[in-house]
Image 1 (cartoon, one colour):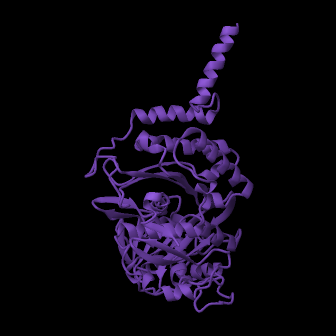
Image 2 (cartoon, rainbow, N blue to C red):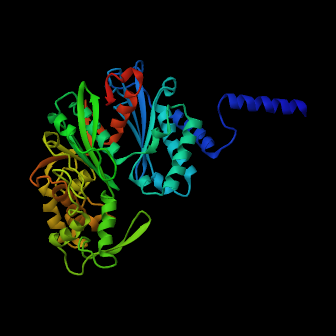
Image 3 (cartoon, rainbow, N blue to C red):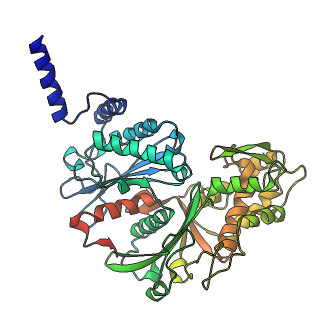
Length: 468
C-alpha cells in the first residue's frame, strides 16, 4: 500500500509541475477542445508571408450582447498585418453572449475557452507565451448588475490563467470595455485599414458605430480645439484622447451614448407608449419585444401610421433642454467635439450599415456603400405608412423577427444622426461592415484597434504607437 501511495504522490507532483489541474470541468472541457482544434488546425503558411519568424500575434475577444467573437491578428516588426492562412484575420463566433450567463459564470468561462482552443490552433505554440490576449465585454455585460458581471469576468480570468499561456498582464485586459474605448479603437481600425494614419488630422476618417446597447462617435480634432476642449462628459468620461500613431500625433474626440444602441432604443421607444399602440410599430403587428430581461408591448396602430407620428415619438428620447455649457452640444449637455474636417469624411458601422442594406438603399452585395443621410428618412417614410404584410414585400431583406420595427429603426437612426448629432441630412457618408485591405476584407470593428494597442504595449513596438 505504501508503494502505491508513493506512486500516487509522485503522479500528483508531476501533474502540478505540468500546471494541469487534477480537476475542474472548465479545464477538462478545454483540454478536449484543444485536442479537437489541434487536430484540425489552420496552416500558418499562406498569402505572401509564409514564415512566422519575426511575427507578433494578438488575440482579441469581443464579448458582445449577442455572442462572443474571437479575432486573431499577426503583425510584422513594422506593425503591418501579415497573412494568417488565406487572410489577415482569423475569426470565429459562439453564442449566446456573456450576459446570458448571469446565473452561470462557469458557463461564460467555458464559452471563452471554446474560442481560445481555436486561437491555440492558429498561433504557433512557441509564440503563445508572448502573445497578448484582451477580452472586451461591451453593452451586454454593462447591462448586468455589478456583482453578476464581476463573477463572470472573474471566472473567465481564472480559466484563462489556468489553461492557456497567452499573456494577460492585469485584470484590465479581461474587463468591460468602455464605450469610449470602443469608439477610439474603431477609429484606429478604420484609419489603419484605409492607410490614413500618418496623414494630417483633417484627412482622417471619422466613425460612428451603433451596437445593440450603445452608439459611439469618434473623429480627429485639431490641436487648438483639443487644447480648449472640456475635459469630461457628464458621465465622467474624457472627451479627448491623445495618441501617437503612424508617425503623427492625433487628438481623438470620442463619446459613447449608453442605452442608445439599436436594441436599447427599441425598448426605450416602446416604453414611451406602455401597453398602448405605438406609432413606430407597423400596423398589423401585435406582439412583444424583450430587452434586458424586460418585456415590452409592441403593437402597431389600428390605422396606418406615418413618418411624422413616429418621429414625434422618437424625439422624446432625446434631452435637448439641458443647458449646453459648451459652444456645441448633441443632447443631454454632451459636447459634440466641434465638428470640423476630421468628421467630414464619415464612416457609419454595424447597425447603421445593416439597416441601410435591409432598407434597400445600400448595396447588399457590397461591404461598403456611399449613401446620403436623407436616404434613411426617405426609406422611413415608405416603411411607416406600410402594413406589416406589405413590408414583407417592400423590405424582403429584413429578417422576420425585426420587420415590425423597420419604421422605428429608420426614424430613430435618422433622428439620431441629424437632430441629435447635428449632421447635414444631405451629407454623403459611407456605411460599412468590412474594409478591403490588400486583397482581403477585415471587419470594421474595434477589435483590430485593440490588437494594435495590445501589440504596441510590447517594448518592441512602443516607438510606433503610444497613448500620450
